[in-house]
Amino acid sequence: MQIYIGNLSEMTTANQLACLFLPFGAVQLSHIQRDTKTGRSLRCGFIEMDTPNAKSAIKKLNHILFMNTYVEVGAV
Image 1 (spheres, rainbow, N blue to C red):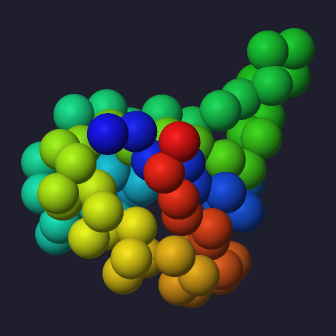
Image 2 (cartoon, rainbow, N blue to C red):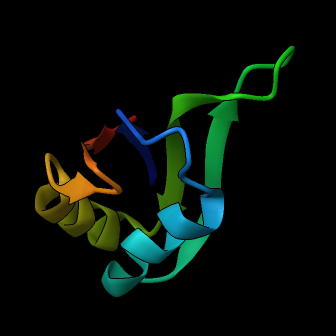
């Protein structure tokens, strides 16, 4: 299942994002969206993990404070 994470800090890396989701299960993919011209973070990303684990992660992580911003987490 693919999970969307919005309102990320510009400093968030794909590895940091994966570490946030690891307590809920294995993360198959972690990606931060970047502007193709500047390389700057678009402040959103995606995680891919098994559906039961993903649903639990979405429920627990939506609207938590992560790297000084409240993130929005939901299914794609």
